[in-house]
Each structure stands twice: as C-alpha cells, then as structure tokens.
Image (cartoon, rainbow, N blue to C red; front, top):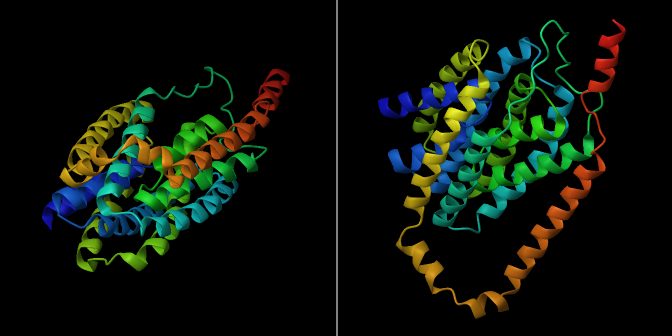
Amino acid sequence: MLTALGLAVGIGLLLGLLGGGGSILTVPMLVYVLNVAPKTAIATSFVVVGVSSLMALIPHARHGHVCWKSAVVFGIAGMGGAFGGGRLAGHISGDWLMVLFGLVTLVTGLAMIFKKAAAEPEHGRQPLPMCPLRTPVSRLLFDGALVGGLTGLVGVGGGFLIVPALTLWVGLPMPAAIGTSLLVIVMNAVAGFTGYINHAELDLALTAVVTAGAVAGSGLGAWLSNFLSAAILRRGFGWFVTLVAVYVLSQALNGEVWSALTAVQPEAIVGEKRVWGGLAAAMLLAWIGRRIHRGGAALDPLGLADAKQHRKLV
C-alpha cells in the first residue's frame, strides 16, 4: 500500500501541474505494479483522476484560469462520448484494451513533445484575455465527443488530449487550457465510470489509498504550477509518457494478442464487413472534423484582433 500511495502522490502532482496525465500513469501502475485486472484498473482510474482533478481545479479557478463556458460545452459532449466508450469497452477483451491504451498514450506523448509553444505577449503589452470572447461551439462539441469516446474506452482522462485541443483549436493560453481541462476531466471521469461500473468491480480500500495520494499530490502540483514553466515540464513529461507507452505495448502484445494478429489472413480482412464499417466510420468522422475546423478557419475565438486594436488605440 505504501508503494501505491507514493506513486499516487506523484500522479496527482503531475495532474495538478499539467492538467492531465493522471490516468496515463494510473492504469499502468495498477495493472503492472499492483496486478489489478485491466478493466478494474480503468474503472479505478476514473475515481482517482476524477476526485484529484476536482481538488486541483479549485486553486486554478481562484486564479481565473478556468473558462467555464468552454469547459461546459466541451465537457457535455465529452460525457456523452465517455459513456458510449465505456459501454463499448464491455465488448473488448482486457488485453486489446491495453494495446489501444498503449497506442493512445504513445500518440499523446509524442504530441506533447512536439507541440508548438504558445506565443507570449510582448513585453510591456497588456496580457491577452484568458477565455474566448466568442465560443466556437461546433468545434468544442465535436472535439469533446471525440476525446470523451477515447476517455470512456481506455480510461484516459483526456488531459493530454484536451489541453492540445483547447490551445491549438480553441486558442486558449496554456494556463487557461490546463485549468479548463481539469473541469472537463471531472465530467468525463463521471461519465466514463458510469459506463464502466457494470462490468468492473472496485477494490474500495485500494481505490481510497490511491485517491488520497493523488488528491494530496494534485493540490501540491496546482500550487507549484504558478512557479514552474509548463512548456518545459510538458516536453520532459512527454518523453516519459512515450517510454510508458512503449512499455505498455511491450507487455500488452503478449502471446495471445500476437497470435491473434499473426493468424489473421488478408482475405479474411478484405471480406470482413466490420472492418470496412469501421474504416467508413473513421473516414466520416475525419471528414466531419475537417469541415468543422475548416469552416471556422477565420474564427478568432479569443478576440485577438479586437484586443490588438484596443491596445493600439490605448
């Protein structure tokens, strides 16, 4: 239990600092260190990450780093996606869920490493607004549902998917993206847990210990986030998450999964309707997402043009 408590404090620390990463480490810790079944580990991670994110949200909100309207729109869409993903997970084996978890973790780790840093305001200039003057509702709904679906399916709280989405597509500064993501994570965790609880049993004692450690760490992390560079922390942690992903994939691709992959015949794949249906659904989602984001290409969600014009007049 002491090992679990120590690791949970570290997980909460990262969650408070970066607005994400709790479940990316919680699930591997429970599965590979504490030998918890994958589906139980994912359900437990929803409780741990949800409660610790709620605690970390409080100091961020006090500093005005939470965009409530954006969070509610993104979060409501994410809750629907997370519930659906959690229900879908009941039809997938634990080994394949860990493979998918490893792939999602690898992609998000690489995105953290290579993500372009947000521009800082010029010296002597008035800081740009934290929250958007015009909320891009269609973008938030689509991106929220997509991230929520992954959240519910593999237990990833979505912080490392939400933060890049809020910074790159919505245009929030990093402090606001981190604070806002915590509220979205809480909403996604509640929905994902609701979808998972029917096919997973919790170890209440272990859940309580890990949650307590994560809450303590998240409070410390939220306080430290006011003094440390989020960009440097994100790149460094991105490399760590990538290593975690490689380890998870090496463990998840066991004999059973590898045998199933090597036993698949190309002719069977071509004739499998579910494969073509999945590809068609993925292409449809990609097309819809592209139309939504291209349609808002000229959108200035933070009202930067208005802010710059105002500064010129001042």
